Image 1 (cartoon, helix red, strand yellow):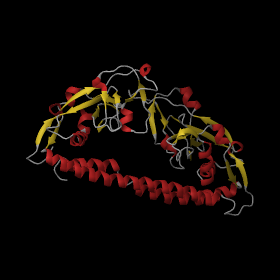
Image 2: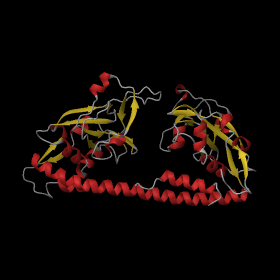
Image 3: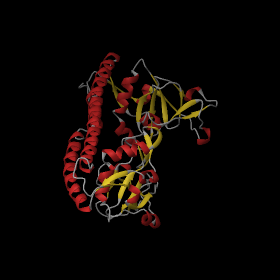
Image 4: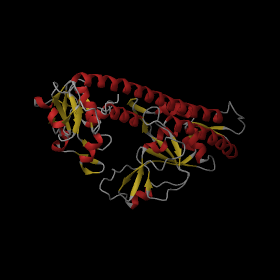
Length: 401
């Protein structure tokens, strides 16, 4: 750890008191009272709260401005230090309320400095690969550099400025990716819309008349004990028209389940639950996976009636602007961040269907366009946002900002 000679080094235990949250049980949860802050609420502001209306100890109450530190969960996603900004609430277990010595260190500086030591924190944690925790004793031994309060204020201002630029990059990248998704849908629409091409031999058909199978998958909990003998796809597998069989998580897979929910070449998979912009995305399996791999409950498998429609054409057609509009209209959910479409509603979606020979030609043209769009997406993803954030913190606590 290199930093200016005028800075001091403190252990986290010398800078603050750490008060663990309450071990709320599911039977404590309600719909009224104070919100219970769990780790998921720190990592994702969109996650819903559970509530508690009973009596509680003052040490478990938090309010805006309090510093929180999550010390248990999945490495890379669950560990972290935060300043709470959503009002009065109650703290769940596995999160410390941090009472800082503010005559020595500023809260924002403490948060940034602690987050710059997350890798060390995770290395000191115990447990399985997917679920670990660090003891309070080990946490308190982690060291951070601490300059004067004035210098801390200057560093916090510089970090905030740099992080704002990173957020701008992330927003632009997300906007670019969404535009590329719309571009893809529009290109597909131009190929599939009978008004824009030779419409001879075209017919409008509903999905239910073009498939022989519509079936949800099976979700199995991820194996964290090294006993996995199979895998299940994740929702990310359908982000592209080609099924991403590398997007998976390890599971213990019974033979009967492996047979019932297997994946064959030509199977089309549709996401049945996601955000409004991503629900209903379709992808086709290019070949049968060699390993034991199934699809999850959040994906619907369609088997195309190949006498009427080619599987890859069906996947492309479901990604067209016209089909996407129908899917969004049929998706149900109270929040735009999570909506669902059932197999029955998916059957009702209509698509234009030409002859098989025409479908083959359309697939060739769309594959070429899809390759170009994929190159655009790769370029827009080349800068890793988390790597940028990490670089900002490393420079800040080396005295280089």
